Length: 635
Image 1 (cartoon, helix red, strand yellow):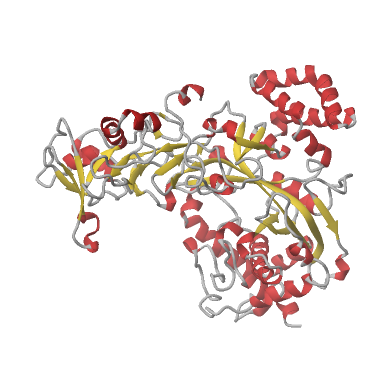
Image 2 (cartoon, one colour; image 1 turned 60 degrees about the vertical axis):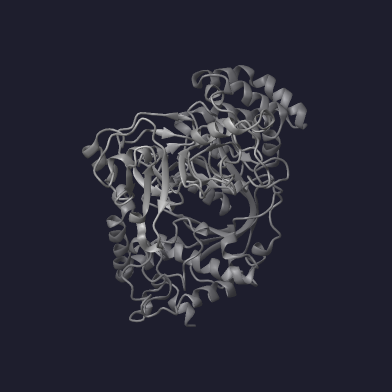
């Protein structure tokens, strides 16, 4: 990407008006997304443009799965805001609200250079703040862009549209098109009231039918080339060949950018203190720098040849046993490059590792772990049926990495990126890191009895019927037509319990519901059984949180909180409509669950508030006995 960097000037922007939070730079304003700043709209550039402005963070498991050396977190030092992310100007068309001139940024910059003095040009050669040089008014970026399902995005074809859709009939594009943007006299005019006029040849056209799905394809069939996808990738400053037809969309449309986020918990043995010391050492950073300059095939052999020397140097730096350091370096630099050992971060195998750590099946020798501290409890102290164990996670670190995005069609959160149609990776193949950020916090892990839940599912036919309704609705949904997934009764049960518990914990422990997240551990058809839920803090400072959530997990609090949460799930103010529903919410993917009783802020839910049904817990009005906890709630 060094060659691309030389093609555009990189300017420093105002750090007060052009800063966003680190988490926002990974989520809604990640690479390829547009950000509305006070004076202009910019698009977040590819990480190759800002790799020297990030703080390196590590998660060995996730690095191994995604085949990278580290993750880059925007921002420096103690600041939670980014001061180094690169942006590119997009969209390129701007409008003057006074003179109504509507031109591309090239025109406005040319006018800036023409009318500015030498000192003004020396101080501001590229017009950081777009404005009309004649009216002295700030320019407004266009609200309409075009994007295709393969992730490309470009400006709307304003000039060709104005001439081809001319009110008096199509006319050829004139030699010097100069556009003005006009609006109707009333707000009810709609797209027919938005008119683009060429001042040079007087061609005029409105935006009627511009937002129809096949509008660009029909225009090209009628008027010739100029409407197919340009393959434009502004965040990378390049174009590729694309045979698709784009769709006109509002600049702020939610479907214009769907980030693909991969989340991982740092667990033993990767959370041990010595592992953390290795990650931040100068010797280890030097090792990664040397290896990053080698081809994939050369990395392992080179690391093996230098292993003893690097282990000795690193052990002296951090004052640790050289054999322990050598074991860690072998695992990180040699074994992690073995393709046969790579686990899909969206797959069940990755969750099994976390489940075993949370349930205490992975024993850590370091009780004072750097990123993971677990306290076991006695299950006999909890008067909760179907309970296997409760683990109090005093300290936990989660890494969330942005691997890519899609446009128009959302990606499946459980699908591997390679299988997602229209998926665009945020980085080039040779780049050895992904943008990411980390969250340190606490949590409560509840493990349920697999045998008893399985027995309840097998003998309750109504539960199978309700589960099949959700599966059928999913198969008819947009996402279900692209990917296959079996929504098991156990998953619906665990997911609904997690939602009800988060709603109640938000009252008990002081955290808002948006500050808590769920993580569901439910087996599939792979033979490994697990039935667990982790409720943990999704926001906290660099040192973590203050223990309020863990305190609610002890035996003197959790049973009452758990029972109260399920009691509130018995009745909804929208009943009997809610409990009798055969499909509600997004694409009818919920049954007895709505915003009044079970839904959470979408940042708290792994599945964006779908696959929920209170009947699995409390039963229905007609049949209370089908609920797993209905008898316990009536005691």
